[in-house]
Picture 1: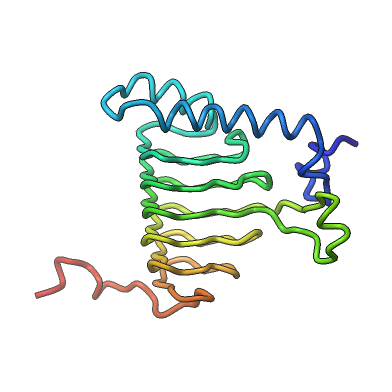
Picture 2 (picture 1 turned 60 degrees about the vertical axis):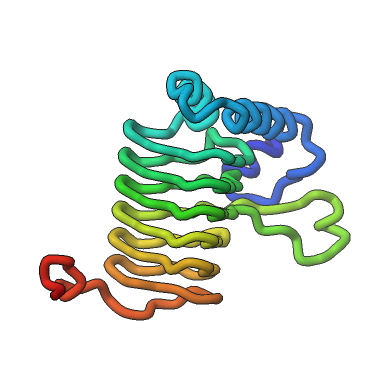
Length: 194
């Protein structure tokens, strides 16, 4: 089994010294560089680069530069999603972002877990666990999502949160560690507010 196959299977793998994975990350890094150095008004060129970097991205997405991604090919982004400046997609374990999501600036989605024992960590061993974000989510700025987390649909994650555990549907959650503050209800509708 190759290191890439181990990574894709959620097993411990050599992330730092495997030639195939290094080449894939270098390709993604080059595409991020190209994207981040393309003028915002050059929409066609940006779209072409994004299609190569994020082949799992659906229609009508907006991603502002700068963007960083470990692989890009392991990220799926639903339609009509917006990702603000300085996003980092550490996507070895797979990242799935739903439709109609709004991701604030400086957000990081981290799928890698590093070995606890220093000797093994120094050998480059890590495991990648998927991150899943449901439809219609909104993140404030500086949100960090840790490996293996699922965030339910129609959920708001407050700015500066560090999400270490799953968050259910239809809630407002915030903090470090992130925790549910309250459900989203009919009283939250703008039309119901005076």
